[in-house]
Image 1: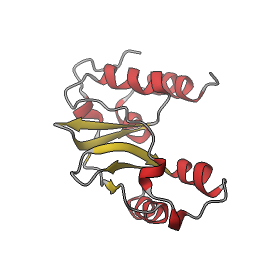
Image 2: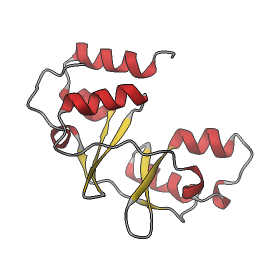
Image 3: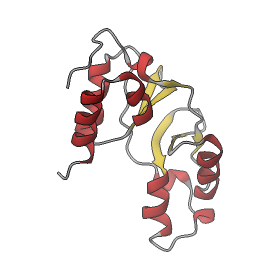
Image 4: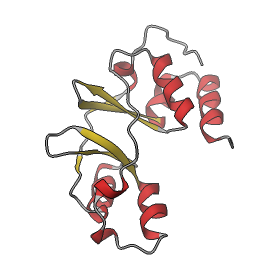
Length: 144
């Protein structure tokens, strides 16, 4: 996929700052933070502040609640999925390609092992022309 602005970087696309959820926190707390921040995903960090994974609202519903587990008794570290991230200096095209290849809707932007921002579909909608946004959505949501 190519972007309309080849000079744009992940830093240009991202929403700066992303609250990190400590790995020891419970999923009910994660859900509260997502609600309060109006976000659908949170990076999960270890005690040193290093991102170890990401947890989404869908993860909480599908992998916890639907399985009959109590979100107040499940730690974020138990559910955090593998981490796919990008450098702030990566091109916008590289970020989009990663998101498409991994079929993810949110991409942490990492610098020196710390999260500096997050690229979401809303960020893409603000930066991509409609036809490129439609292509991205098709690639991420289409059946494998």
